[in-house]
Image (cartoon, rainbow, N blue to C red; front, side, top):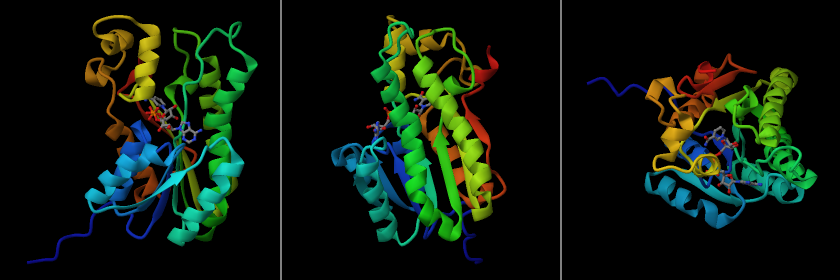
Length: 267
Ligand code: NAD
């Protein structure tokens, strides 16, 4: 018998950092990257946030490390990234995923401190994560993946998300600028643009906007053509993260990969 073919997508011997790995899209992506063979740094605000994810990864035979830091705080973030990269001996993939909705309110009611907080986590957090990972990424080249949102690329009729949307639009600009800046180091930088995906953050969005028996379906109001209105699954995003993390996307940089079941087509 011929030996089994090597898997098409393998991250064996690669190290990947995932921020916001304790929940939702970060969790699903961390599990995918680990299943493809990567040693994964699971970063979240508290170590206990990622304990369950680490147990699931190790239970499936994967390798990971629990990391505790706030992505908006350079004092907390920098040493944690450095320690993980030193432990792994390399860093190949960075998935800047940690994000918050922040306060959704008309700008007349939104406090400047609330605006700042949303930007600190979503946009500055992305900048800091990539900045402190750079020395290792530069050693061999690598892949940076930033989780933005359809909220940053189109306008929704339910207003109130201006701070969130601007922070997400900023992430897309960050991706384009750094893709160009880092190309000569063979570092690819791409954005994932998720639509509505079933995670705690999306639950909060729905709760804020509709009060009904079937809030998710009502909120989406037939806006997702591919699934007859149902939100996406975190694994839909994780598969796109895996593609961007792997050599399958070796000629892709500065791209926006939209994972929204066609939601953005339904203006
Ligand atoms: P989630 O709330 O389930 O998970 C976010 C994780 O990030 C949590 O574990 C949280 O503890 C962590 N986190 C928050 N602030 C942090 C900080 N300062 N430092 C470190 N970790 C922090 O949300 P999710 O839906 O998985 O969202 C992940 C990303 O996807 C976010 O950037 C979000 O804006 C984006 N997104 C989500 C959707 C959706 O529908 N779920 C759609 C578009 C974009």
